[in-house]
Image (cartoon, rainbow, N blue to C red; front, top):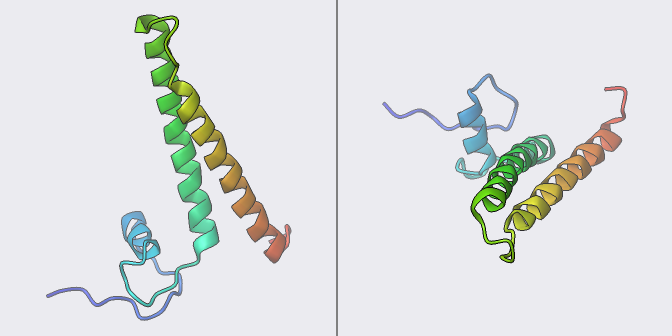
Length: 101
């Protein structure tokens, strides 16, 4: 028997995968609380780009042509953008609620 889709956007005790699926709007008509979830998603993306930057830079340093372009700059800039966006979304949400909560 298929599961019924939630009818409200109230927080519920679901797994992280289900909350992510809800956030990605698979459940049509449900508007999830985007700022906090977006901030977490951007933080995880930034961490993944940090690892990718390290791996690409290490590979370029050990095996790459000294005159070739180091593609770690691309992932590094993406990582910085993800962390800055995550911080901005988090701070905006905290300013709305107040820092005490």
